[in-house]
Length: 411
Image (cartoon, rainbow, N blue to C red; front, top):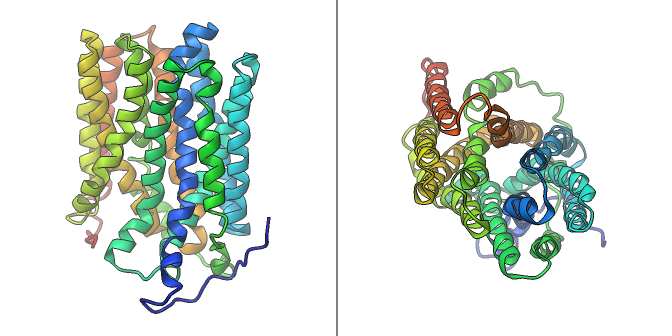
């Protein structure tokens, strides 16, 4: 690979010939986040096929789904601080290479199921590293001095990583399901698009400069209030970021006996709805700093209530409607979480704090596995109803924790 300078460019005046390429650095690098989201959901859309064609049990399939989170959490917790120390670009580039290798292992799993376990685990590790380092890298590439900051750019900087991850979630599952339904060797061919996307994302990000070097030398600065504000303002919301969508596209299709294409549609519908509501979430945030989180948690509450009804009636249409509502809640709380972390984190701790947010968020992806474990103790409608109550209580907790806190407006 040719050497790339790690010295950030100096700001240029509007209209200079080199300005347009600078504005595209963040956009070019953002494709690695789409590859990360795609790699997560391409497997989710094939869960039914793994049951029917490879004969995997329900516990094995949900275990493989949860194994992604088991790998993702150490990937986040290790690579977030690492990206603050050695730079965003080397960590993100290495993670993207691992992401490609993990998909290769999953393709081998069509002939030997033992490959599915390391493949799924490494998918999680690589996705965690991409989320930690990539989110910080893209945010910084979308801010000064790489772009001329204006209100639209400032908003895009904190949301761009989430937008591309959501696009990957939405596209990967649907494409994998459609290929698996109509193409030959579905357990192999369904993974080919991700290989192409990840390779293309790596090429697109090749010219993007390192950004973390600008913050070296400030590591000794103390920000004692950041951890407290993070615990009060982010942790009550973060688990619902993925608890809601994972139930929408993993649990609900099985409860209403949806087929492979139905599962693929649900896998695309949930994050797709989340992607569509993010501009609305940004406008809601301008009214009150907690408004996006409160609206999101209330939407998640309604979504779980609708999911309980769908499970009780075993109605596929109601299940899709519930999945869409859960996806909308996902879009609101994801927008809130990423924006809040960006506002809280000092520059030299941005990757670390971003990693903590994604870690707390991905704990929620264990929700389908928890529902499987608890299915013997309570029926699915009751479990989904309990989740609705917990989401409402989280909303109350968030409001209570911030009742005495100043209310700065978001511009």
